Every structure is written in C-alpha cells, then in structure tokens.
Image (cartoon, rainbow, N blue to C red):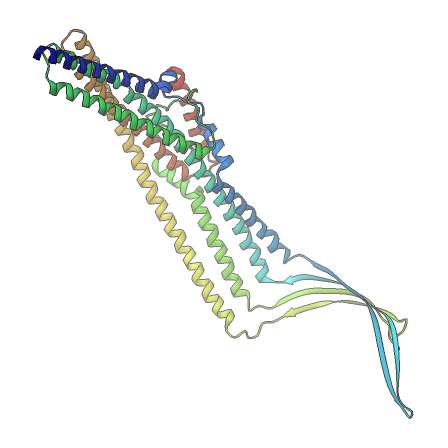
Length: 472
C-alpha cells in the first residue's frame, strides 16, 4: 500500500516538474525571441533618433515660433525711426441753410453741394532718443529668442540621445539576465533527479525551484523595463521600435572629452553657453529699457509735411477749390508728468539690477554644475575600469564552473550562481557606461549646438554603435 502511494507521489512530482520545465521553456522562448534573432540591436541609429526628435518635439516647435516672434520686435522698433506716410480723405454731400433777417421777416435759403477734403502727411523722426535705444532693446530680444531656440535644440538632442542609450542598455541587460534561465532550469532538474535517486533533499529541490522563479522574475522585470524604454524612445523621437537592425550599445570607456583640459573647456563654455549668452541678452534688454526711462524727459523733434486739397461748396464759396502745402518741424518738451517719469526710472533700475543678479546667479550655477559633471565624468571612467575587472573575474569563474561541471566536480546550481554573477556585473557595467555617456551629454549641453564637439561626439557614437553591432 505504502509502495503504491510512494510510486504515485513520484509520478505526480515528475509530471509537475516536466510541466514546470515545459512552461519555463515556452516563457523563455517568448521572452528571448528578439534577443536570439538580433541580440541587443535595433534599427535606429543615434542620428536617426536625433533627427526624429527634432521633427516632432513640441517644445522645440514652440521655441521656434517664439524666436520668430522675437525677431519681429526689430522691425517694429525700426519702423518708429522711418518715415510715416498717411493719406486721409473725405467726400461728402453738404446741405447748407442760411437765414437772414429782413423787414419782411426771416428769409431762408438752402444750398446743396459737394464737400471734399484729401490730405497726405509725412512725419520723419529727427530726434527721438527713446526710440533709438528701443531698437537696441529689440535686437537684444531677437538675440535672446535665437539663443532660447538653440538651447531647446540642444535639450531635444539630449532627450533623444538619452532615450536611444536607454533602449540599447535595456536590451543588453535583458539579454544578460536571460542567459541565467537555462542553468537554473538545469539546476532544478538536477536537484529533482538527485531527490529521486535518494541523494538529495526536498529542501534542495525547493531552493532550486525558488532560484529558478527568481531568475524568471528578473528576466520579466528586465523585459518590462525594455518595453518602458521602447515606449519612451518612440515618444521622444516619433520613431517606431524595430528590434531587427544594425545598432548596439557603444563600448567606449573614454572619449575625447575625457582628454580635454578642464579649465580650457570651462572657458569655452563660459564664452559660448547659450544659457549664459541668453541671460546677458536679457540684461542688455533691461539696460536699454533703463536708458529709455531716462530719455523720457528729453524733447523730441520731427520733420512734418502735408499736402491738402479740398472743395467745400457753400453759398459764399461755390465753385472754389483750394490746396495747402505745409512743411516744418514739430517738437515736444515734457515739463511735468506728476512724477511718473522719475518713478519709472527707479522701477526700471530695480529691474535692471535684478537681471544682473540673475545673470551672475546663473553663471555660478552653471559653473558649479560643470565642476560636478566633470568630476562625475572622471570618476565614472574609474568605475568602468573597476567594473570591467569584476566582470572579467565573474566570467573566469563561470568558465571554471562549467569546466568543473563537465568533470563532475560542480553542480548546475553552482554554474547558475556563477552565471547570475556575470549577469549582475554585466548589468552594472552597462549602467556605468550609460551613466558616462549621459554625463558627457550634459557637458555637451553646456555648449552651443553648432560647436564642433557636438558633431564629433555624435559621429563617434554613431560609428561605434554600428561597429559594435557588426562585430557581433
């Protein structure tokens, strides 16, 4: 009776293990299909990602419209200094009634005739200091609009490159963790066979199954992370995710940015940064407006000319037409405005001083950020070197474990643990590389988009990502 029950129990356990392994194989095949067909690669290059982002980024489109709007300030300010020509006219029907007192009483007479009046006038500013300074302010506003657009252009590139790197990193992370499934499945099967042979224990079987489920959960988590990165990439660039392609995560441990002189790069940033130049443009705008407020009490002088042609038929001027031509100057001298001009000067002085403080604060923040980013870049290189040594050690341990397994000196569980160590350190190394690349993008963000370093970095990573994929 006990023998029959034991046999039935072993059959049930064997069937459960077989079902578990079959389910595991199916899940593994589904999860890894794209990786097995094209490990860690997809179709869009770095240049594709940047171009896609530039074509759909609403923030960039908004900055473009604001730049165009700012440029119109120059035309409007210049117009105040150019000749102003206007034409006015009227053509009416005049009905006039005249009444005269006579000995016989009031005598009325009604007359109807045309009333026409046409006038062309010209005004040319001669002395208008406020409007002259206003043109300088408008030019500074135009410059600020252009710089803001260039800043948004750099941010758009930064977002696209970051999303591109995240997808590549997530693919390779998934691939690394997926390679742990087979050893853990073999370990679970080995422990089950040892239990059936009387050499193992139920605790060992349960532990092997728990480790297998943990590995599956890690792969599932990596898969979900990849899906999230794919969605973020599509949203940032407008490009569909295509797993079959020619691009892999670049393996660049140092770039030309690491070799630059720290002080020289900062001087380059401080002189060309779009953010700093934009703050200086705003400061110039406020300075011009301060001058405008100071010029409000000065007189203005205009050249005026007009030509007038009219016909106002009446009982006394019937059939008479006349023309007037006038040329002269017109001046305006402010005398007293209730203290408004002096108040405006004080107000604009405060606004100008605030813009100076804002510019100084921005320069300080950018310099502090530069120091932190530069230090992070250099320390990240050291982390990558250390991570590479750890990864090589894990790979050596995995190779040794596999050799010992072939000689019967180690179990599949030990091989699985070694494979997990390789996966974890591979993931850490991928994160180290991506962190370095994003740190360097933050350095490039401080430079204008037309700086040669932008193109040099883009070309380097574009070519390296394709070369890495080809080597695989």
